[in-house]
Length: 571
Image (cartoon, rainbow, N blue to C red; front, side, top):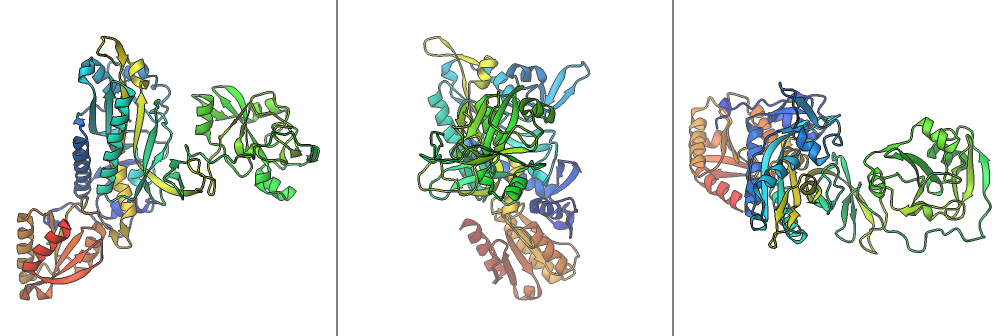
């Protein structure tokens, strides 16, 4: 491609609203342009990168035995009602009506559509197993689109769905997809880690793993063991329960309860300052409504309640903090003075809080707290569970030696064991060898393709611009004559361009009449792996090669250049 003919509008500075490095660089490199908040156009070079991502994904999906389909983005609301997700999905579901007043949704995912397809086409165990996938545009009405392609309202996604006759078959399908994802993200040059995760709105009866690209800009926190392979999203991460440290409340060696006056001291940091006590000696009481029913949750003052864990424990579809009026009705005190003693509602205590032998807690009386509170002695837990976020330094729940470390990550893919969540309610059944009707066992597997593109740029860049991994670069070689007005340089550059193209390389020839500095800055910004500069030594048949990812620069004859490029991409 000749650069003078390519729509590649580079920018010296990124727009001020672009926060993430990937967003800034993709705008500056002329890969994307914003149409509306969270909605982007891919320019030619950006589309080339997407196509290469799609090529990698298709190759690995096909090698794993999957078959490609293409499903509608516009989905009947009735299908979502059958699965029970139409009302539960929330405001992120883009809803619309056609001219006949029929309700539809723009698909954020395709579990309902694929289940509807399979229930109409698969009816025997002889047709199983089968795994179908597609590459499609998805729609989610994000409340806060941000970071460019990392959190958009319209995005490219690969979603696959496996259908098996039994759980053993699902486990095999899941493992194939898990392994395929490792190959895909490795080929993309990502530094990633699979982590245990929560199933969210997709749901399911089995396990799920997220594939996280490690990056400081990531919106997700990953807890990972420093000793074993355990890793989990913060929503899912557990911690090792210390043996023998759960207070049973049967000791008489502790001081008696003491009520203290704490006027206007409502928050943990205010208690720490007013009473000269560390936050890990405070019992924090939070009141929630789980599907409308009140429950109290007790954690240490230095910990945070994990609402995903709590909702799962209570099997609640809707979990929310109690408002001021509800709090005052349940405790008899103003907000900030709730405590576990004397509550008439179920009390759930986190293991770490249960291990305290003498703590500060709210007295359920405005402007008062209790001192020397002992779980087990002064209040009894209805349930003793892990209901908090894991923190740095917690013991690993998977091994006895490890401690948890925390990382930030970008979710680029997730695999789920759905089981019969959709097949049962949507009656996607098959006949087994005995003629008995059984629900199909399902799995689903997603990759955010546009997110992968952003994650790659987040991990592969320097101060000058993008440094594309070899399999993803929009072009492989950038031929840059220093002066478009120098006939000798243009002849050599044109000859190299044609020879490289004939050898099968994807080449961009910068034939623009621009200053050398502009050309070199654009080249570094775009991030093409190999740059061949044709300059003053063109008459002697000598050019300069620069490898973008290594920073190495060397001189070579025009005859040697082709061999060096070939060797670089084959090594």
